Image (cartoon, rainbow, N blue to C red; front, side):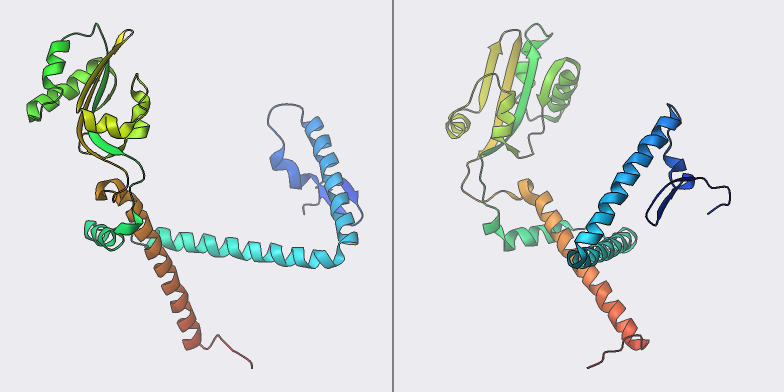
Amino acid sequence: MPKEDKLLASIYNNKLYLSEIINSIPQEGDSTEFIKSYIDSWIKKQLLITQAEMNLTDALKDVDERINDYRNSLLIYAYQQELIKQNFDTTVSAQEILSYYKLCQESFELKQNIFKGRFVKIAVDAPRLDGLRKIFQSEKEDDREDLLEYCRQFASIYNLEDTKWVYFSKFAENLPVEVNNSTYYLSSNNYYTYTIDSSKYFLFINEYQIKGGTSPLGLVQEEIRKIILNKNKLQFLKSLEDDLFQQAIANRKIKIYQ
């Protein structure tokens, strides 16, 4: 503590010095008022702590133990995260994902209807709408590129990733109509158009799958990747613990008394 440090307040055996709060004083505003408010809060806190120590003697021991356990847990966690950051390999191969999927397919029940398709919302007075209709369902690479460029220029909402599985219930929020029976909706037609107010909607259903079966790999591969990654992390940390233990034994740092 510097000799010139200013004592701001004291209560019982506790003292508050200016150096302890100097970094908390705001650059702007009334610093005197801030210090006064800080002192008041500090005194009230010290009073509560003192009363707790006087009246919770037995319980306080348990609190101290829990605080120490919590501190140790924080230290261990921080150390583990640093080790993971520096040394853990986050790579999960496509073959690992596929193997896990095949082994645990019963864990990936499809609980919602899904589909692959295209969707565009566009103003009714947008240019070249006839051209859009012609290329909207096309599989030709040139048409797909033209469709993407057209949507970038004129569409207010669009989704052209027709190779990616999407939950239909989430996607249906973009439609101008309420779909009460998505199973019927998906199975009865693969192309829908709507004209509502000043907007026109185009929907093409390339492929769909009804809930109740097994989720396709493409839908759950990210979930599987996280499962494998977490499992690998646990194995990595256990290996570190085992290595530390073996090193301590080899260096004769551990003594067990029975």
